Length: 72
Image 1: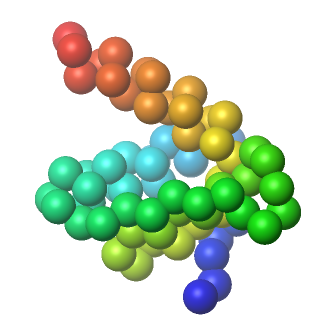
Image 2 (image 1 turned 45 degrees about the horizontal axis):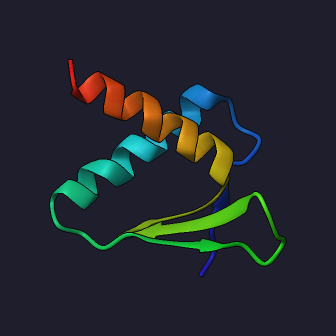
């Protein structure tokens, strides 16, 4: 499986991808997150037709901001 590497994309671009994955997750789709073979902080995320390599730090940062927005 070919994954799109988004590690060096701007945070705004990463957020769009993360939001797509979150929307699929909320529809009951499976999401798999694993450490990438290149090591920390790289992770792979797979959900439906979305297959990415990203950094866990930006993903965690996005998650915190997303949860804060949800509470408003």
